Length: 115
Image (cartoon, rainbow, N blue to C red):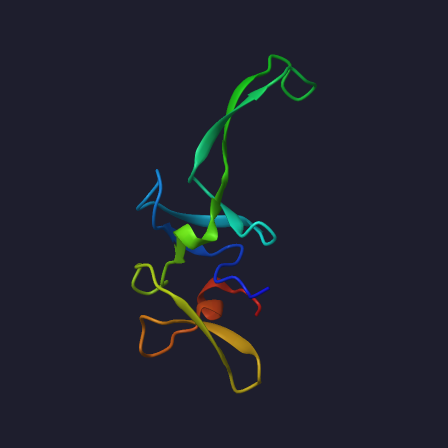
């Protein structure tokens, strides 16, 4: 299985679907399903029975997962969606970089994500 182009904590842009054009932070990545849960995107209504936490029950709004092919990471400098590449740095670690940027800014530095 290949690596995914998004990670938890990335800011992503939604390419298609009902929420096309929205941006949000990735809350979780479901690797086996190739899906991600993005903050404020793909909101669904979940009907709940009464329980200890919610004695009245009711309808709660929550984020559902989105297929990762519909997501593009947002370049931290320009604020525009971009594709991601990987290359080795001087220490031999794979580092993600924005393909639209010819200077090769590293995503990991801006998002503080270990590779």
